[in-house]
Image 1 (spheres, helix red, strand yellow):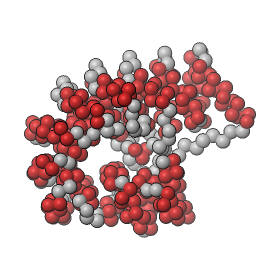
Image 2 (image 1 turned 180 degrees about the vertical axis):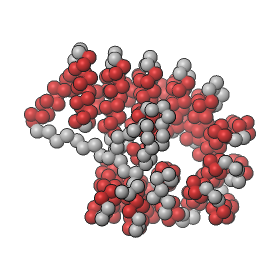
Image 3 (image 1 turned 90 degrees about the vertical axis):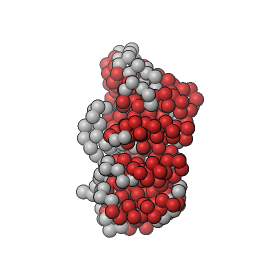
Image 4 (image 1 turned 90 degrees about the horizontal axis):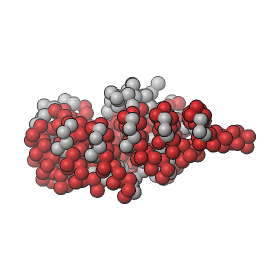
Length: 402
């Protein structure tokens, strides 16, 4: 079977009048005072994939019973996930979760793990309210579910609630808040994130540094540079350099050049990305030389991305490695960042001899392409590989939903 990071579409229940009436009764049971009746209603709606019940289910995220709260969060999340997520194992586009949290694993899987389905305000409001729940598992699941399914832009109130969570008594929540803020690029959180860089807990400090990069806070360049000098190596240094690389400020180019030859491949990767985002054309020669001698494939891919950002044609180099389960998430992130301008360059690769490349390119066109790319993707409907056929169908569905 090809190694395509395929994400399954949840099929809506096709109901006749009698079945619809039964489902309406199930929805009513969400308000039943009997605990077991509410829990059974949730499980029935989840199994039926009854997405019309998203708003009706949302209040149960703050039910009096922890089991119902977790079931409600899991049910809501299931309506958005393209494929079920198993937090205990590694699958394509999913990184291992050491916490065993499905919501966190879904968050870490990136934007292609969810359908761009509308998010009713009832869901957002209840997930935000659950961030302050007294049960750790509930609040952790709630904040990562929010980060996974929520659509930007956030309301002012939602933004402020997430900023407030950066000062939560639970350090896991503080780190999670920073990650969600970074994912959704909530620029108003800049000052609070700067404060969090000095948090008492390392995971919070590291998450805050990366989030400052995600939101592109140029006022953080000096502080992040100082953090890089302080840590010098390890995760602290990587977090600081990653933040600087995402900002890509011209003043950081000497730092990126110096770290391009670091012993740590993760630091070399961040340095390459930073050079690409800096927009400095004078680093092209340096990158073109380095890509030929670099020992790490992960770093070579980062250099190819950087050169593409700097105006060179490295899409073929990125695509040729998209058949790697290990590298596919990295490349997907780069292609999403490069966005619609590179969509046309992907089209010829829909005819690649490698089935995994054909399927993954189709999925990427689903993420950054437009209706003009549908005919080219649709041509894969008769592909000899069934995974490619499924990837093409999902790509077209994503374009239509967007």
